[in-house]
Image 1 (cartoon, helix red, strand yellow):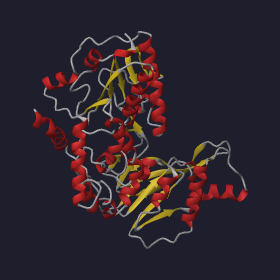
Image 2: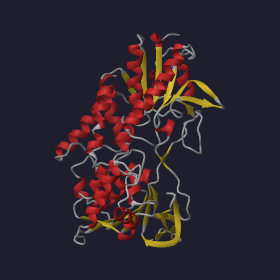
Image 3: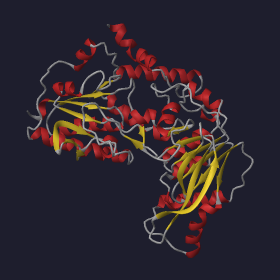
Length: 461
């Protein structure tokens, strides 16, 4: 087999899958070959976590959709949506129809937090809440927002997104693409105080300066800092020390914190409290969440984070854990339960210590939920290079089935969606938004998305 006759399926139409398809097409063309690429997505719409994992009030980050849109709009990659591998079609059936399969299914589950009480009613995972406020079609339409005081455990960008959405007044979300049911839920929210807790100090946070700055720009929300949390940083500043390895981003954030410490607070109707040096010990309550217990922490002389033996309780009625994402297994593919990834070597999927012929991984399901979009591109390039090496060396088995995968899906009655279908759904959402003076309003129900996406197909047939 040569590069001139490759057929490749990519499972997952988020950034990892789309970039992998784009790089694959470019690399094969540069080598003088040809490739047919099918992008298979379980949701009716493309773009993965950019559509369903980025807070509605992040238009700059959502601008990434424009570049992903341009890639798919070239029509060199065929989008097949609303098809779940393992349910609508088996992984083995893809192997029968393609020279290679690339898994780009991401990491959409919450990482666990193993402390007592974490499963009490009123304790939630970040991924579920993010899916709700982003209008994911497979989560409930309502969310319980009857707590006045809420704890968010974590110090990454997702933790700040959740805290900001909880603290923000619903009317300030209207310029975004927030779905109607989410706006209604936020408008009825009882939340007045959001507490964000991190294990380390303000100089070791995992979020970015942009995320931090946005907190200070939320109307009618005071950002509350606690002086005890800054004792170590103040001591460093007083000594004139310059801690090694601190990036400019960290320096910017520390300047922001110090500016906020001079602000007057007390006039806003809602408050967002940032707590540092707090390690969660237990979620409190018998039948529902009534509080959270933390152990205060500090860095020792070697820079190791240690508990102080001092414990403090906070009265809250809900807890959100934002301690990271975790991958989900794909039926019939190897999976590392401890790391939440598909085991691989440079993108080649491995089972029982040996590569699985024609099976590859890219994105978070390959390396874990770390890194930004730039990492996704370089990660995809590594995987694609392995695929091309294998194809050039004759290590890929040619497809045993010559028919189009769409024929099989049609035989099974699977209502698959397409790129043209996405364009129709996109236009519909923009029209909904235009009527309200907004850029778009997301359609949430899966069946409605599918109906709108397939309307043109059905009218032609």
